[in-house]
Image (tube, rainbow, N blue to C red):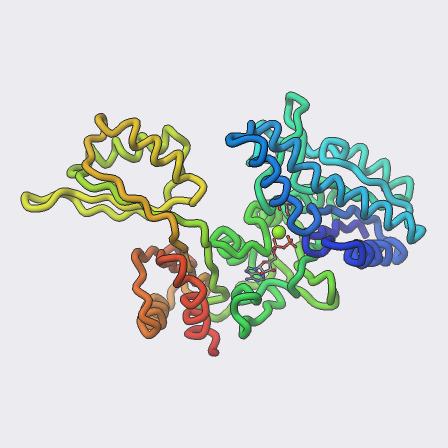
Length: 399
Ligand code: ADP
Ligand code: ASP
Ligand code: MG
């Protein structure tokens, strides 16, 4: 069969881990499979490269940043290919552009637009393992792009879809998808299978075990997807399985959330002007709470947004202050969003009250509460987030 095996940064963080990954890959090839391995940068390499860029530039140009960040995956691909060759397994490394991964030109957050599989198929035909660099591609100008932090999962699924692979395995440092981050909640339970929809919601709401676009792509292209532990590869989670029967299948935390509160936004027209200014600056908003003005009190609008959008949002609101006509702007950067996710909550009642009760018992006062079809989220101060995840998890899964 044809298989894509993706290895994350922690699975490649040292020479012995590279050897471990290479042995897993070589065993698959020896078993008669065609193997495409996709690699992330080793350990914290991408963060270290980002730090290097900050040392030489306060506002690095996105094109050059992509040229720099993509080098981490290129080091990893060469090391894995070298190790495979050492194990007598024929292998060739390919950077994103060599592997035919085409993207648009949004540096730092590019979308994969297509995969030209010619080179990979030719290498597979020669009996070689292909080791492709994840997280990167090439845009129509011929420039290197990166596809967003954690994006190697999406590179792997895109290659699996384009190559019509029978299976895409994501090897990481935990044994699959759990009911909460197992590094945060000791009692978290591993799912043998989880539906695409639940996984998509969980990864969008902070479960970084899978990049959310990888789940979307796997669902849309029907890719068979598994999450496994590179150090204990025997069991894992099949993504794309049955929905969980219980009301909640996972508790997640997104720690990169900020809140903004704008006072003096009295009527609907001013509210429209405010969100139009944010939209024009490309700021995407999550929860919105509005209290319209009255004779006694001026109107207030609060909203949450990703921490990386604070500067853009503040600049847009300050620039258009006269036009919007607001009074005062308050920014709270250190917030988090804790969510309970589960397809089983559709049509079942009492989930929100159980979640809120668990938080109240811990004296945690959510600032905002929102719901979706298969999730309930609360926004709260970041220092309370870990305890909130543990309490909510205990309420649904037991301590
Ligand atoms: P990699 O470097 O392999 O891509 P990541 O750090 O991106 O690894 O993703 C794996 C991490 O995801 C785990 O170490 C774990 O801490 C975290 N995680 C968060 N939520 C979950 C969850 N529900 N199930 C499993 N892991 C989770
Ligand atoms: N190395 C990249 C990152 O750290 C991509 C990835 O790991 O998937 O975000
Ligand atoms: Mg990852």
